[in-house]
Length: 153
Image (cartoon, rainbow, N blue to C red; front, side, top):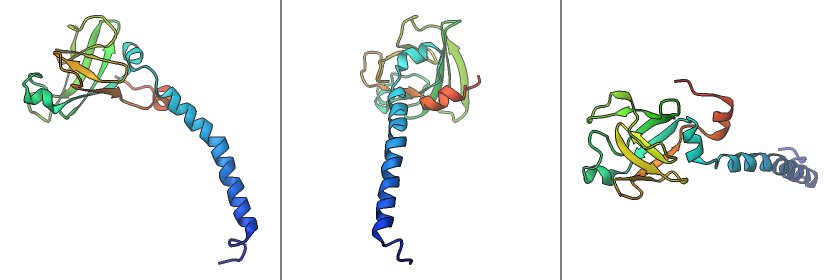
């Protein structure tokens, strides 16, 4: 190994490059992280695709009908029809089904998952039939992907 790599000048150069990288890229990624905490309720009302997961305690209590717990469902709100389009497995099948339901109230945070009415808060926590923390709602894509790549239907 060359003596340059063990020298003080290499150590200083490496330190300066590391500091430059941190100073230059750190704020960029910090800004992306702050922006990615956008309001899930507002984005959902605009039609953003969401991941929806039901907590297993709902299945043990038989509160979800034909839906499966611990499985990711994908859904979006359609403002033009006030309906929720959701895709995922039903009836203990691995086959993905897609359906739209308009039985959810036209209110921010209300959702219909294959007809099952639920609410979610700004942190993405689901409330189903009075059960708190009944699952989670999250963005299907990070903000930077949503900003640059629109999902097709």
